[in-house]
Image 1 (cartoon, rainbow, N blue to C red):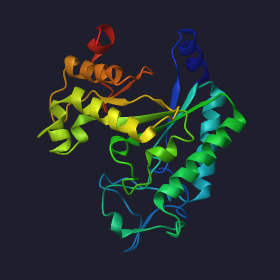
Image 2: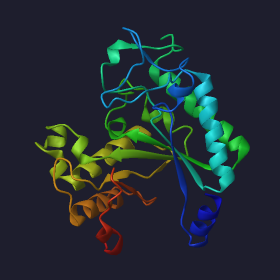
Image 3: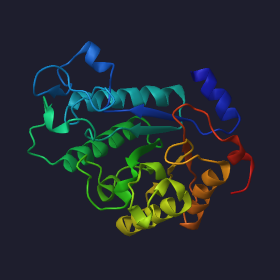
Image 4: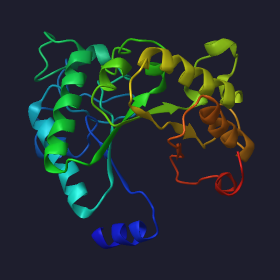
Length: 258
């Protein structure tokens, strides 16, 4: 991995280590002490059949900090933390938390985790860039969505926030559209503009994830480029990232002006 990173950096390619935090199918195979359980017994699984760790468990915080440091030691330029939240789908009312005692709110737990891990990473490498992936709706409404992700709190610690602005994930009626997926530019622009109202004078960098997959509509190169244009028209100039779960990207986007 170190050799690969060196080759990428020689070509002036920014390297990002994406680390999935609280959704983890590997940890439970080794130790189930901090794994979410079902009230009826056994391990709890979300709607996709995935396993989760308790966001309040300090062992999980420390583990992900160590993974982040290993990535930085290999030469990665940035740590990107994903799934820094409580579960959102599946029968969440059936979850039994082994550590979280519900005395603190979900947003307090996630904000405390963010503050702790960013500081711990920067003690290891002061100039490391640490980013976090957020649900796009955290930019639309100033609350934690009942998963712990509150934009105004997380902006205080992370260097970069990456809202996953996938138009296909918006419900009918959002921003007045029957099918938001068919209006990528408008959805991205409206989301970012609402986020600006929440962020105020925050200096956090915003670098959105954009949709490059077919869901809700067939996504063509012009539709992907329209999302990029929406970012630029919203006044952001810190880039963007494309997501396709099959890693099949619309290459025309990279070789044409938006």
